[in-house]
Length: 306
Length: 306
Image (cartoon, rainbow over all chains, first blue to last red; front, side):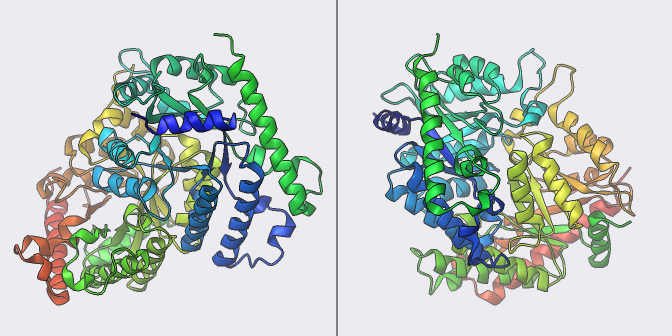
């Protein structure tokens, strides 16, 4: 029986893309044209600008990416109006047949995780198709996400080895038996993933593995063959295209590569006067950046040396 | 110079209470009277009922608790209307001179954590006085919360040993050097806390230590003498009053004890027909439960055997 990993794989084939674009709408990087009539002391006004920005991004990338990944913090900071912008963004992305991955990194005690899981994977207004989950509270913190994902035929990505510089501090701790913490966790996730595979032999229980750590990814790929990886950190954060091969299986599937600032703010690289960028120029730069990233990734995932 | 730990300590003395009440508004546990005119298919309608519920709780406990602790999941599940209810709840709690601790358990890569920190500790509509922070991404995930807290003279609690049954899975992992993970983290937090103490020798960088783990708490208290503990899990989750002594210092300060369901749904214990509870009876039961919890805690914290 098919699961959400099959949806990801089918969509990836249909679009010939495993690129995910992060929707991190930092208004400091918006061109003037989007801020012209914005009252920056009003959450409502800013939230409207965020939705306009996201619509431009979604239109620019929809044919070239498999999913969009709203980063919750950038919406929460504007309170209920920010969440309203998120709701509208999710609806708009779905109308363009995009998968929505809420990058929320939630995780709590069981009863609270169930509420979070319903918020992000249920039928609610901020529910997408997948969510990122923080495992620090242990299995009773992430099992509710797995249960709700299963119920709604959706999916999740558990944080395993994150892309940021200090991720080693906890995730790479060496345990009594000589194993690193992320490796032990990978074994635990594999226990669950191997029992929940779909048609393509992948589970709806995925893992976050940063593009900035290809050596670690190579080990995790072998330990966790039934999980799709969500791979942030490609581009601005330092993850290089040529290092991405290890994240994929021998068929060039099994990972989604996420880029945020490198795509959505690509017009900033074009000239010093980026604040004057027009909407059409924004759209063009963003489309070009998405196509380039997609092609770089495809080059590596299909020509990888096993 | 005073910091937010001093505010907590002063408020605790003024009210003779270190009790925190969690605002986890699960509508399944609301009495009929609060749901009479509610359309359960409408987020807006449910969110209004949640705000009414929270107002009753706040009125019932304001004289007996130091802070309220909204649990974000229960608001997010109703999307932007849920967050609107949170905003109104925070305003109402502040109008009653209560400290607001957002139990959000956020944590992300640096730039995103900065956005979360501004959302919860800045001047925004969902900003309270303190926030709970998940340290799984390492120091560049939690430092932005410390920076923003410092800037706004607010505070945070970093998850260290959570109250849930499976918290041992990651938090109690034994490291190469024989230390447990939470213990190593406690040492790291102490590095930061010892350098940021206020008048009472406590830092605004606190830690979450579950009431269900008094043995662990005793060790953490010694290792981390400059952090206030936020102690969830008292009551329904299994944490016992007689075990709480170890969470406090020799002066009976240094910890806030949090109870959620045991107080806010206390009318459910009164009889099988709790659905018929009136608003005044709700209020009475909740007030009584808060006073009882406060007194149980005071008994232990002031009469502890050192």
